[in-house]
Image 1 (cartoon, one colour):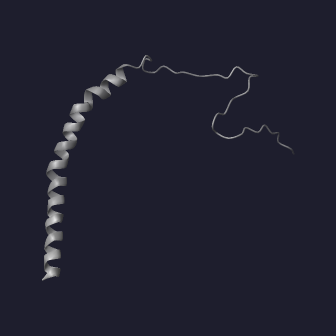
Image 2 (tube, one colour):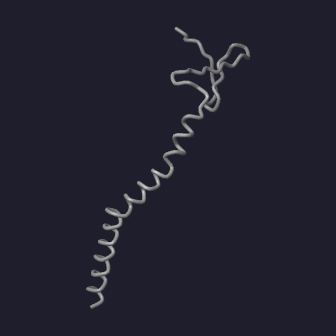
Image 3 (cartoon, helix red, strand yellow):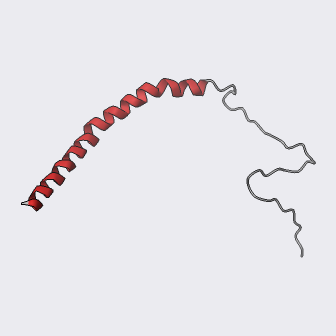
Length: 80
């Protein structure tokens, strides 16, 4: 009788989770997206750069390129 009861509980939990994922979860996600849509749009419009603008940052020290966070730069020559 215990095995049958366990199988029945597993089937019931399976259908409850399936119902939740199919009907309730999309409703909650849609509500969350609608609620925060304005916040995401406000952040995109606050940018002070126009679309298509390019920003280039130079390191004016000795005319060398600076590789920050990408390891050590080693200058070398090809030897024939």
